[in-house]
Image (cartoon, one colour):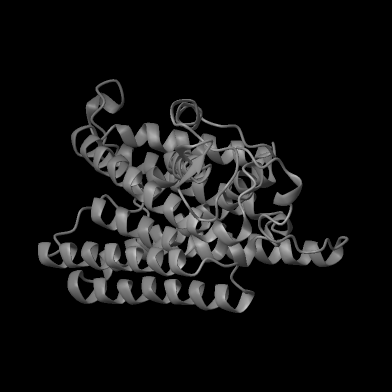
Length: 344
C-alpha cells in the first residue's frame, strides 16, 4: 500500500541521502586507494546501521507498516545487489580498471544507477496506479527470473561481460585515449583533449545495474506500493554496495548456493504479486472481472521471515560447502587486471 508520510520528512530524507552520496564521492576522489578488509567492514556496518536507523525513524513517523515494508524491500534489494557484484567484477577486469580507481568507478556508477532507477520507479508507480493487472505481469516475470536463476546457477552462468548498446555508442562517439591517466576523466593525447576509458566504465557500471533493476524493482513493488519506500530501499542497498564489493570480492565464488536463495525470494514475491492481483482483479475474462475472494494476502512480517530465512539458509549452506570442498585462494577485486589489455 501507499503510505501518507509527511512531505517534509520525504524531502529531508532525499536531501540527506544526496548529501551522504556527494560526501562519499568527495572522500573517494580525494584519496583513491584499495580499502582494507577492516575499512570495508567498517563502512558496510555503517551503511547497514544507517538503514536500520532510517527504519526506526520511519516507524516513529509513519508507524510499523512502512518501516516493515522498507526493511523487507531493503533486505531484498541488498541481497539481489550482491549478485550484481559478479558482473561488476567482470566489468572491472574487462576494462582493466586500476585497483586504486575502482572505488571511484563504483561510486559514480552507483550514482548513475540511482538516477536511472528513480526514473524507472516513478514510471512503475504510475503504471501500477493506473493498471493494477500489471501485477500479473510482474509476478510471472519474477517467477520466470527465479527459474532462470536456478538453471544458470552462480554468476549468471556465462562469465563474460558483453557491452550494451549505450556503452558501444559512447565508445564510438567520444574521442578516447587508449590508456588511463590516474583518476582523470579528460586527458591530453596526441596533442588534443580526449576522454579516458573511465567514462566508458562509469556508463557500463550504471547501465548494467539498471538491467538488474528490471527484476529487483518489481520485487520491491511486490512488498510495498509506496514509490518513496521503494526508492529509499534502493538507495540504502546501493550505498553499501561499493564497500561490499571489496569485502566480498574474493568470497563471491564461494557463495555457491546464493542464486538458489535469491531464486526462492523472487519466486515467493512473484507468487505474492499474483495473489495480490487476484485479490484486486479487474480483468473481465477472469472471474467475471471481480476480485477473487479466496486469494490470501501475505503479511509483511511473513515476507521478512521468508527473505531472511532464504538468505540465511543459502549463506550457511554455501559456507558448509566451501569448507568441505577444495579451498581456492581469495581473489581480490580486479587483481587480474594487469594481465588484460589496457584499452576498453
